[in-house]
Length: 363
Image 1 (tube, helix red, strand yellow):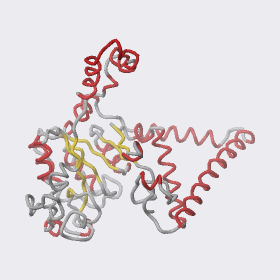
Image 2: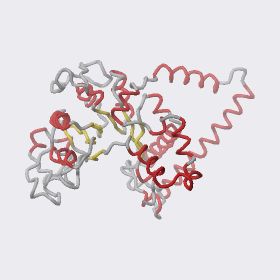
Image 3: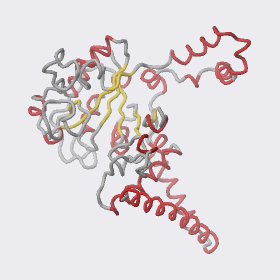
Image 4: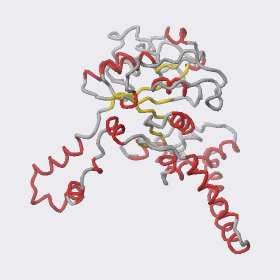
């Protein structure tokens, strides 16, 4: 009941802000010779073009993500769009050819490695996904308390390991003592599997010739020098806002390693993407989004369709009513920006990653 009230209050407040904004715009237009709304629009336009980052090279993105099927020549596009009307005359072989034109461009990406066959985000899972025919792997980057980037997804280690507590409160040596095969169905085969560092993961993926999707899980500016280091960019204290000291453990691949065509960086935190691409615009990046990414801990379509009244917010991020209200307002602003492609163009992104339940809520 309390959550339903919070949702109702937040929704009504946001609706009133839209109405109030419309009325304010009308008043400015009628009562001012130079409406503040027009001045604000000009300021935003100038700021947008000043801050806007250029996208990476198209050929580089194609190496990472494959050929976009909708960028093929006009004849192929026309054939795909008119496939329904031509099905009777073209026959099954032509339909197969059209499908192959799309499928040949797609990459098979292993999410957290082959997480069902081996412990997720482990070196063993990367090797297994290569054996299974994958040509790309996604893994998650977190930070230990001593600032070392490690490959781990959750905030807490309890779900997959024989330990408990937050990964961010552990030193590297403490995190390395955990057995991440402890709760896996095939734990007997992978007993003693440890949390790898970012350096170990990248070295392994390079040796396996796997394209990397590097997902930054933590909203911490200390991750940025490590990511830039992978692409041969050295960062010192003061180069980035909030970076008070130069990391001493940044690893760089050997000279000649073309990481720009081997790795793509992704996260839910646009500010980190901005810092990374501002320092090196050649780095290809994607940005993740889901409904209620600010106000809720997670999102689920079943909660959206259920009686809870929170429309997908399975657990609020904040307990205070006004804090939660502010987070809901920010959710609406961020969602509005995504629908209009503002982050895509502003950050020079190569893609947007959308929560599966938002795309297919009934699957």
